[in-house]
Length: 316
Image (cartoon, rainbow, N blue to C red):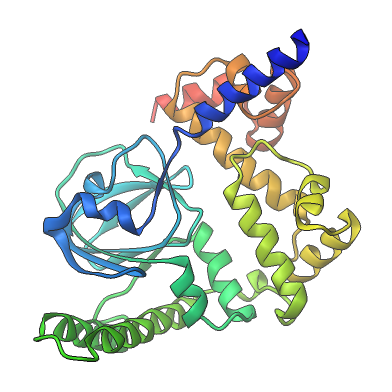
């Protein structure tokens, strides 16, 4: 009985620690009501806020699609463990699963935010290879210039949407706003799709194979980095590891293990940078057999030991 009870307590403790990782969904923006321009069950539009006003935590994983447009000023924002400067005329387009936090420097910045539920995204986006090209691109390239000069159509959609939001309500106000917001979002996705390099294209049509890839990437993004085998995700999605590997490779050009490891190392780098957890606790948190295995994994993917990486980030 003792080993079982010990493992149960250990797993419960680990689960409680993981539950401290905050998420951001639409309803979280209710904490800053004075900045809400429009809100329904699927859309939240806010103005004149700063990144620090977003529901606060050391790390925040998005459960919604979030667009942050910098109207004025400049600030830094950390997205998936990488530092970016967000300044006037630039827009951060952040898919669900993205991890964000305040950057290293404090500054004055006026940001407008649009947050969209995953359900609404599924309704308005055509689920084809072009959509997935954009989504994959955004995880590594979240900042784009989206202003009046770079995309006049997006600017016109935005102005019309704000006019519809500010006008006196009528029987079809909600539907009109939602349809125009859907148009604005699709125009933005089309604009970003033109930036995706051909070598990053997902190959083939979506179909059933694309659904598998979607489910696989969603499962990886929902994980904290503690599951690092193709077998785990194949079992989770009820496919054989061989079939999952073939399908993912065919559509993305990457093996499932490459995608899994890239996600896991981003989670680990974030913990190394933003916590003082010991290597033993870190190895346990990410389900490594021991600190030695954990150290080898980090060195393989960063070229440094965990402590070297932590010290190098502390100097920045």
